[in-house]
Amino acid sequence: MSLVNRLNKALWTPLLHLSVWATRTPVRHRLAGRALERLLGGLTTSLKTAQAQPDLAGVAREWQRMMPSRRMVPIIEESAETVVAEIHAQCPYRGSGNVHGCQRMMEYDRKMLETIGGELVVLRSQAEPGVSVCQVALRRKGADWSDLVPAHVRAGGAAPAD
Image (tube, rainbow, N blue to C red; front, top):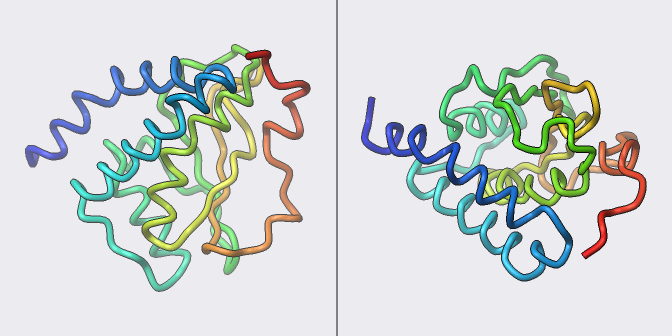
């Protein structure tokens, strides 16, 4: 296993907990969370030498490759316009009800996907009660998302207070 992959696996959990702290409230997100998530996403794309992809299938595979393990983010459905994947890593937001925090924390993935030519929306969040696996949809950058309802809209209710 390469040094980059070993570092990625070793730092994943501590950085995940830092990310949750920084994205838990809208104020923290504005002050530190968004910048932290984009910095970490950019660092990952640099260390993993992410490459822009010519098609959606390539975007999905490249996103998987940037994770500590492809098994962590299996692709469960593919069509010409949408790839649906699951996130199996246990999220610190699991069961918290804070789907808005989850949405904010996914800025990490959005930064990576921006680099390789894609975008992401969370369809089901581990932050929702009883959900143990996140489900995300990937599409090409600039695609229409009006047919999908993000988890933070469907299950979110009001955002937590600052």
